[in-house]
Each structure stands twice: as C-alpha cells, then as structure tokens.
Amino acid sequence: MEAVQDHYPDVIAHCFGCGRLNAEGHHFRTFWEGTESVTRFTPKASHIAIPGFVNGGILAALMDCHGTGTAAIAAYQAEGREPGTLPPHRFVTASLKVDYLKPTPLGPELIARGKATSVQGRKVVVTATIEAAGVVTVRGEIVCVEMPDSMAPR
Image 1: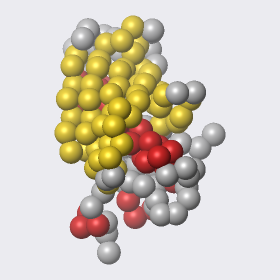
Image 2: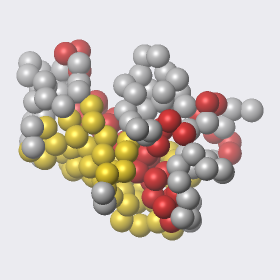
Image 3: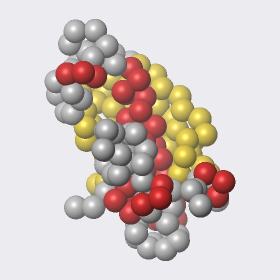
Image 4: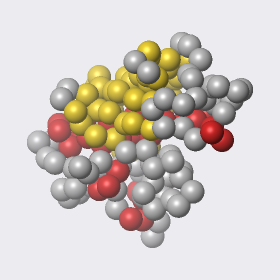
C-alpha cells in the first residue's frame, strides 16, 4: 500500500519526519483508512523522555508530519484526484498546536488519526490524535499550507 508521502517529488522528499529519502529520518507514512488518515509509528528506545515514556518532541514531529500528509490527501480529495496525480500536493506546517493529555508509553505502536476540518484553497486545517495501546495521549490541530515555490530546490 502506498502512503501519500510516497508521491512527494524527490526534490522535496527529505523531511526528517516523513521524507522517504532521508536515511536518518523517522519515515512516517500516512494512509487514508475509511474516513480518516492514519500514521503508524513505533518509537525506538532512543526516543525516550524519561524511562518508559516517549519524548514530546517526537510526538510533536509525528503530529506535524501526520498533519501535512493528511492535508495533502484532503487536497487531492477536494479536487477529485488520487495522490500521485499531477500536479503534486506538498504541504508545510503554518501552525502546530499540541496538547499532551497523558504520558505516552514507550514500547507500543503509536497510531496518529486525523481529519481535515477545513479545506480552503492552499490552506487545510487538520485535527488529529495520537494513541498508544488504544488510549489517546496527544491531541492537536495543524494548520497546513501548500508549500510555497520558494521552498522547492531549483
């Protein structure tokens, strides 16, 4: 199954969180499942905050990349197109609000789930959660904008 990030053009597929071409990155991958987007990620032992719990920065990075991936899927859907069709959609984060509801245990697979609550031209607003072992531990809102041309390598 292909993730939306699999369709990002090579010149802009190096994100530390979701870039498939970043050898050191996390390789977050976002899929559409039913009525929501889903990203699954199992943190490494090095992603520790304190013994037994995931670092908040890793959780924010997951929320960030899940949001921009969800925005890309929503933009394709709004146009009645499939990811991978041209022109490609690639979003960046304009605003990231993260609420840490409970400590996130280190060990279980994390599941980020999201929905686009607003799609207006180049701007998409996404709400998302992260759960561990079936418990929502993080909630967020990501305001995403279509990547400006000035960010694309020439």
